[in-house]
Length: 196
Image (cartoon, rainbow, N blue to C red):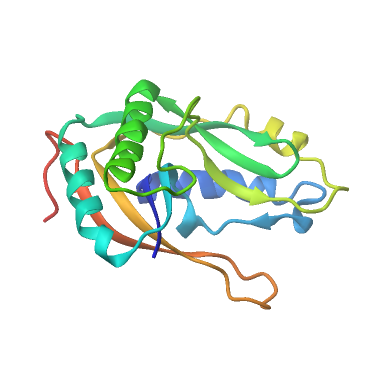
């Protein structure tokens, strides 16, 4: 299973961002970008890659223990940027130190479970972000899109859990196909109420 740990924004935060993305999709060149579906918007904490079935119980236990060590914290989707002209993303505002520490814990959980995926060893210079679009067309510059996101500020919410997500790759040979994400499990952060 291809897995990663993430923070999932709540429905109202996703709806706010979706309205902003609607304005971005009206900009010149937007039709050439491969836009991520709103059901795939998340803040990746640690990417584990392919996780063998026999490793999954230990990873789950380590993530559950790690989640209990972190209190809930405030976050909002705000601003944005780009990774060169390849990826357009929305950023975060709020208790960024807290999400950075949570990312470190999620990476350590993978490392201690014996995973050697590309991100299980930890992340230096962690920048929380939600991928909005990918660009493979050299004629499209993402700078105007990133500039349009600079003033975006969503509402604050309380991050109260960590999620383990399975990534299903897009269907091969299907134009416009996108990855599909499935929540495998969630764990409350320390002090947060458990799932009902």
